[in-house]
Length: 560
Image (cartoon, rainbow, N blue to C red):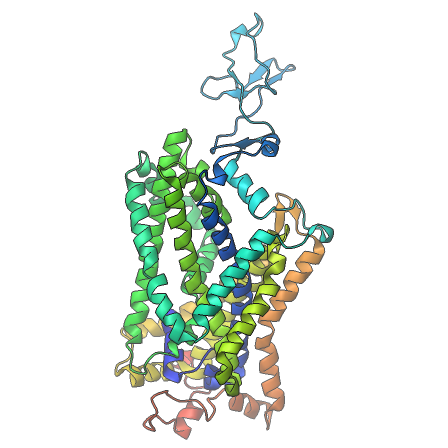
């Protein structure tokens, strides 16, 4: 699909909305891509604001996520990840002591010390006094993120939203200023910045990889990273999560690939580009995995716990687990500054694509706005900043989760399935291959492999993944067994409709406004219009009437 979208953009020289001159009935797909990109751009910059917060916090003499505040001790604060130890218990009825083996010690109540009486002398009872209070130990890095950075509330009640947190709001403002300044001249300005933001992270990754590999216990982290749990391969949830990760990693069906492809030279070797980027994406993910898990392995060995006890997912990886691991290294401030600066530069690349996709769609639909490119960029930056302010309130973490889950998670699967069908089943797979051959001088090799992937594998598998997500849908939870309030879920589904409804609405509108019988209307809105053609400025490529009509009912998957 990455290759397909690059071809669509480069061949036509159009963005995600105008490219659907190839199949006007599917123009809503481009609108949905634009809206999804806007939603992600809004909350993604909030995560970049977190990164800036940590970046500046790393410049302190003592890293703030390494020391417990007095009010955190009651919450079980510990200065490094610690295994939870259950309370000692004794079953008087069955005359059986639980957790009495020395290899599995239990925790004394409060600060009491267990004295071996004559009665209990028969048991090998190891009552351990712990340094934390509460039911379980909580790493200071976790409390710093929850209580100091985002000041997370326990619920999502409407009266607990609170005002924007001024420190996060300032970081968010700075992040938007940087993004707007880099995009103010469009791809011309952002392209120069990307030379740095796309290469600098590799330098930092390699530095951190070398440092992590020298830690005692690094091999334990590597083994945990590369040795799979084979039984999990039978779990469909794993495959669904992997598919979602690939969509986000390559930005498929967000519109950014089509947008960037539209700026390529017409004869650019898009086939080689697609292969190189796909391979580099995998390689980068592997390098990042080794960087993280070598450090986790060293950390786990140092504090005496398993690697799985220090590894986290989601926010916890970037803002809890890895900062804690870096704090164990000498000159921890330096490593933290480098790490969070790298995260921010990585985020800039994604943010550029998201915002530029939205702006390109507007300019393609309203060409007169192109001369106001700079003003539009500044205006959208201001609008997005204010729209993101609810995400930096004490309940902002829940808002970000809603936007991510309902606005850009399974919605992307729906858009991707519609996109494959609209291009390969309606526009025509053989016609698409001819377009590639006209542009590059040769068809994609092996041609039958690409046709099989585009026509059968991609649309069917993605549609099945989307259906599975809908059938297995579970409401978002604030904590185990505590779902989001009904009003929050309602807002989430409204957001889902907002980004997905343009597809059916546009299709219905095209049918209503077309002329003729139902079949004639379908044929007219499903064939390329007069604006469709290659972006090479020549008249060599022209669709004959036979080609225009041929794709309907002939050039489809059943006749390949």
